[in-house]
Picture (tube, rainbow, N blue to C red):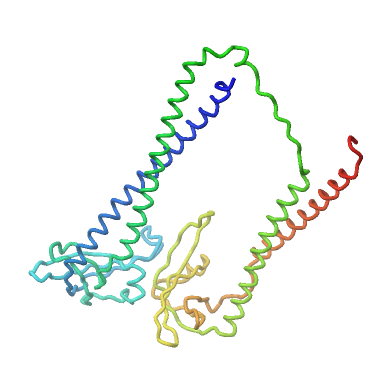
Length: 353
């Protein structure tokens, strides 16, 4: 009886170990690929840092690819440049400006403008714009991924060992199954009698109350924060004229399209700010790259901006979340009341009634 009753648990352990091994092995393979790629980039970065030479490149071509044209979902700035190494080697290359370049104003590059280039003396094709050759951030990422890779490899080995042991134990047990009496194998397990300690109203009411309270708390917190932000923009906001640098269209995680503008402006203190802001489709369609727009920003937090045409007020979905949370919490409280009342009544009844 004892050996026969353990067989389902052994099969379950083997199946669980096999599933864990498959998942961990797949993740380990993906991490290995990423680790190899990061290792290559990190090696190139250290090579560039150890053999760094600075040259001046000349822009030979500058092309703006507007969003929505030729399949571009985001505005991109492409430019070609040429530079000469210390030994006279002529290097031609091209690239795209990233957000850091755009924040520095490199989107204003014209043919004939010059930019600093750092290249490796032994391999001039290994070069980058600017003079920063730091690799600290990439080193930390590589170390962190290596630790994750090692942990996943350990889990994979442990899962493979458990699978092998469980599979071997199941095979040995099946070989001795003929010695078990047939009637014992056919006997069904005895049912386990359980006693309910709480009624359904109490459980369901508790769930609704907690769920509704979370919704209500989230909605109220966002409403309070939204009101505080509106008040800050009304009392402290500063007007400025920004330039549209990029336009982009994406897809939200929950579905639907998202639209954003990358804009750059200068504060009253002379600080240049590059920031992205979400807009609706009509606003995105009405603006183009290099167009000026009027915005309002907070001096203490200049990355918090709004269009000057923004209509302040709490979004309708926040009120919906608050209302939904209140309804769920109230329903949960009512059910809890019924559950407690029913439990108290059952407790007062004589035994057996």
